[in-house]
Length: 180
Image (cartoon, rainbow, N blue to C red; front, top):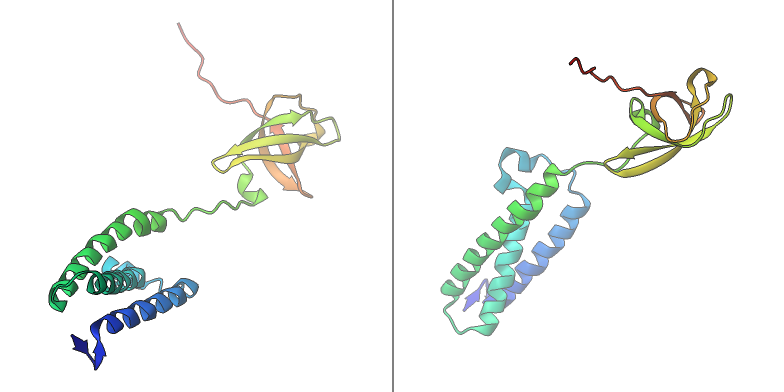
């Protein structure tokens, strides 16, 4: 079968190459078209481009491998593309969109957290604390609030950051007393 004066396999191959090239450009400049997927998830360029890519790749392979009518090949290719596109959307694109959590942090974002002293903090000196976050453990230089000494293993509250060092105070969590 011919389409636009070209064999149908060549049309599918051209569609595959063009959609692949546009996908690469989209990956590089996806911030420009970011809002399109907000209106309707099926208008998301990643979904549309993957559908065209899956359809053209499947149709090209089927045209080479099987001896079916071109209409049947295109119908089967579209059905397979719908299934693959749905799986791609629900198992890859949707989780990625909701997982926009940065691993980056700033010293100011750590203020108010509770850490533990791993190198004792002397009076008018510096020690080291460790802060456990969802991203892992962070070791930081620390000094005592009002130049107080803090022993190894004590829990501390991060008050502020001065000159790259945390100013900390010994942390005593509030606990209800047992009244028996």
